[in-house]
Every structure is written in C-alpha cells, then in structure tokens.
Image (spheres, one colour):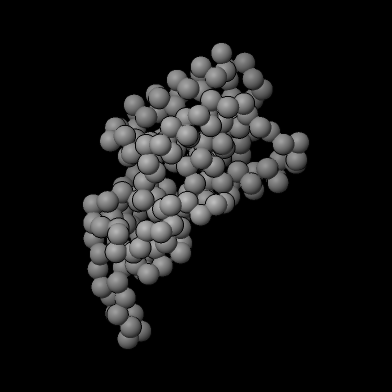
Length: 174
C-alpha cells in the first residue's frame, strides 16, 4: 500500500464531530477529545462513536494515525471506488480459506478501494452460483463499510448510497 496523502494528517487535525474511518470498525464520529490519567500518565484520547454498532471507542490521540485511523475518503477516491466496482471480478483460484483471509484483510485495512474490490469480487448476480455462508458474511461486511463511507462522504443517507452501489453492480452484471 502506497503512502496516501491521508497519512500526513497529524493527531490535532482530527476534531470533534468529524467523521473518521477506523480500520477495524469503519466509519465513526469523533464525539470529543478527553484527557485521562492512566497509570500516572496524562493521556489525550479521541472518543469515537460508532452509532450503528452502539459502540464507543477511545483511541489515544498520538496513536490514531499509527492504528490507521484516517479522515473520510475524498470524493475523488469515492469515484475511484465506483470505477473499481464496475471492473471485472477477479477471483483467484486459491483455496477459499486463503481467499477469505485476503478479503478479511482488505475489509479491515480500512482502504476504500480494497473494500470496493471485495464487494466487486464477491457480488453475485441473480443467476450465478449460490454463495457460501462465509462468502455472504464477507460480502455484507464489505458492502456495509463501503455504503457507510460513501453515505458519509456524500452527506447522504445509507439507503441512497446503497442504491448507488446496487445500480453500479447491476449495470456491471448486465
């Protein structure tokens, strides 16, 4: 993975109310920045809320970029993701367990393009063979990440972001 421009973001560049992407959980919103004393050391923490998952995460501000937390993708990156979705599915001949591991790494990388690749590669059109349970799980996880970030970037709601994605996937299959 090349160093993308978002890597240069310093901790103080994230501010309350801003939407961020946390690799393992997707899109969250910084609720506040608080200080906590832990073992005698004053720590500054981002308090990030993942409303959909009813979860709150506290991330030390100095560790934020280290753990891969990043700002939302740019509209440019979102259109790149749509271009990726339009592409032809690339399915390696590797065993499923190995492929599943790769898909999972892509989803948890927090990288929008990598996530779009998973959606593209695992998307099934009506007349294609059935998906296994684990394929379906990975597909839905990737789709949800993609949908949430696109919705957040476009300031839209998830259903309309979902429809945008569906339209692209359907047009691709046609």
